[in-house]
Each structure stands twice: as structure tokens, then as C-alpha cells.
Image (cartoon, rainbow, N blue to C red; front, side, top):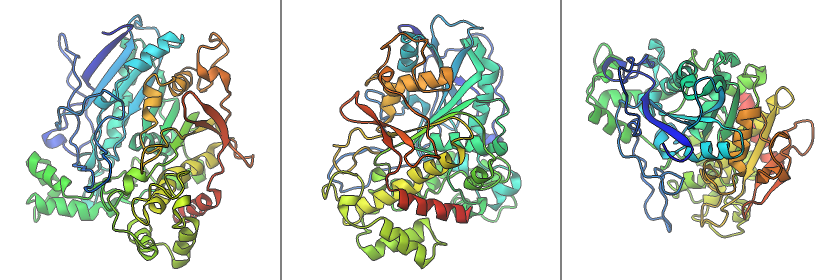
Length: 519
């Protein structure tokens, strides 16, 4: 208990996924008997080693919290399926407060709910007269949560990490009333892999939410294109071979009982997001025919996704941190070869030439944007960062908005603060403190308003000037106009403006046309 809020940490929402429950869907936990000490965060799920590439002229960590002062992950275990709840101290059962569920990022390889404390959000919600309940959840990662391959497909066990998230939503529906929350007022919110997860829950069951959530809030992630379960076969086979399960009649069962340390070493030997493959990650959500029945862009085209209000946005320089491990790509020819081998194996020579023209090698046009010829770590670094940011983040966001605006209420944002960070600019994760802490509370207030009213704008019922948001109207994204409005965070805080979501339009149209063609 601190100030006006009460925190409950490390509450099990599912049974420990150990032994026969490794790689299995989440199961109900044993009922808690007596008093449960919910004072400390539960263990983080197993983390894939993600070292920062050596030889950089600056320091950066993929594993630290982006929120200042938050300690690093202290405890890791397979027994990791915990939620944390922060509520207004005065909230009692029956208060029926809106609920925010935070899904952390980390590329489905790393991350933990403990890196993102929600106390300040709840404190702020009380201060502006819109109290909310905050929940964060761990979910299984890397091979433990996203193992793929024929054997996994046949067992019907794809996307276990997404199933964990869904199970946490069900836990909220059953239990949040005890904390003063209302499960029918749940907003699912995430960043990076967490935001992509939010988008995937929107296409799950062809958009039938089963009443689990009523809105989405996505930072740096959308329901983009996915591969089939078979694409994960090489890594399944590698882990089977490494753990000595090769030749067993049931390799999946053998993996369930393989020593943890041996399995973890195998995972750490596979490529990670900080390395050469960049955002072409090994451990990914897949089209499994059960949770995700078809390629998400195709579901968007068909209108088979949740008809709920949502907010979605990106930072200006999404991919700079993901191109620190491919600095050996230095020529125009190597750039095209890298796109072909790593991201677009089915692209034609015409496609690749069009992309190369859309993302030229001129560093003045690359990311970090608006930095001229500076920050060119290698001859292709800013070009790779521009392509990667649009391919993985910006273009899928526009694709989602283009198929949902007018059908449902949608808002979009762009975060352009911290542009002076050398080589990285407004990089992936820099927006997180805007929504968690009191920089200026613009992002936090928008999130709280959305949880309350399914609209990020300050409602007329609040006192005048209770928020910097009171001075600006965040208009809905509108595909019928040539310049869809984009709420834009600028330096210095609390500067914001409404810009047009039209930057690099031709390049992103090209990427989205290719996405639609392959969906």
C-alpha cells in the first residue's frame, strides 16, 4: 500500500506450467487457501539471451526497463504465470471501475510485468477523477510460449503465450470485482510484442471477443503478417537435436521433460532480435488454425476482427535499435540481398528494386529521421532502420487503420520526442514513460480517458484544465480524407500537435500492397 493505491503482486492466474504442462495451454491454478502474501513480483518467464552487439559508440540495453528507476528482472522461472493488480485504496467490490490490462513487449523473447509498475497510472487516475484498476500479466516467451513446427501443430498447441494472455483476461473477468474493477470494462493495452498481441486478440475467433475486452490501446505494434507453423520447424528440430530428443517417438513429450538448463541453452543459441536477423524473429506468433486461423492482414481485409474502439501509434524511429546487429550490411547490393534473404524470400526482382528506390541509401532520408547526414552508424544503417520501422510497425498500423476507420472509432499517434539520442533518435520504447509516468501526463491521461470513455479526449465532465489534453482535440483517424489526423508528441514536453498521417505514403503503400498480395 502506497499513497492512495493498494498493490497486489505475484498473484497466480494459472497453474505453474511445469512438467506435463510445459508447452501446454494454461490451466486453472489451485485455489488459494488462507492468506496469500502478494508483496513481491512473481518470477519472470524464461528470457532469451539478448546481448547488445559489441563495438557500438554508445551504450544500450534491450533488457532494462524503459522507466527510470525500475530495477532489472531479479528472478526467472518456468513458474511465472502471475498477475499484478494496482487499485485505488478506497475502491471496494462493486465499485465497477474500468480496468487496464498491460501486456509487456520484448519481441516475444524477453520481458516481464515487473519492469512496468502501474502505481503512478492509478494515482493519476484518482487525481483527475477517473479512477481505474491496473493489471499486468506475465506470459510465456520464446520457445516456452511460441514453439512451432509440425509436431506442435498436430498437437494443437500453437501460440501458447497468446493463450496465456487470454487466460489472464478470463482471470480478470472472474476476480477483478474483488479489487473494485469491472471485467466488462476491460481495455487491453500493450507495447511492441504486447501491442501486436492486442492486435492478434482482435482477430482471434474472427473478431469475437467473447466479452473479454471492450477496447484496445497499441503502442508500436499491429496485427501484421504471420507465417505458418511450419516456418518454425527448423528451430523445433534444432532444439530436439540439442536436447537429445531426436529419435524419440514423441519428441514433444521428450522436450516437456528435458532439463530446463539444457532447453534454455538451446533457446539462447537461436537468433534473437538484437542480432543479424533483426525483426525477423524466430519465436513468433503463427497461423495455427486454432487461435489465429488465417493471416491477420487477410482477416482485416475480410472485416473479421473485433469491432471495438482502439488507439494505435508509433515512435518516429521504430527500428534503429533493431539494426545494431547487421552492421556488416554496407552496400546497396547487400541491402537488397538482405531484404530478400531475411524479410522477403518470395519478393520478385521488381519488388526489391521498388523497395530499394522507396528507401534510398541517402542518409538524409533515413532513420533516425530529421538528422541530416548524422547518426550514420554504417553506410546502410539509416536505410535499414527506415525500412524496418515501416515494414514492421508503421505500414501495418496504416493497414489496420485503413480497414477499420469508419467501421469503428479509431485514433492514431506519433511520438517524436527524444530525437537527440545519438544514432537512435525517438527509438522503440521511448514512448513508454509517456504513458506510465508523470512527464506531462498527456499520454497517461489519454489512456485513462480511453479506459473510462472509450475516447482519449478529456470529457466535458472533468474540471477545466485538469490535463494538458484539455488544450487540444485528438481527432479520429479518418481514411476518407487525404490527410488523416495524427496526434503528435513533440519536444519539449508538453508540446503536442495534430499532424497528418501522410509521411512516406508511397513507400508504405508499396509495402502494404505487397502485404495484401501475400495475405
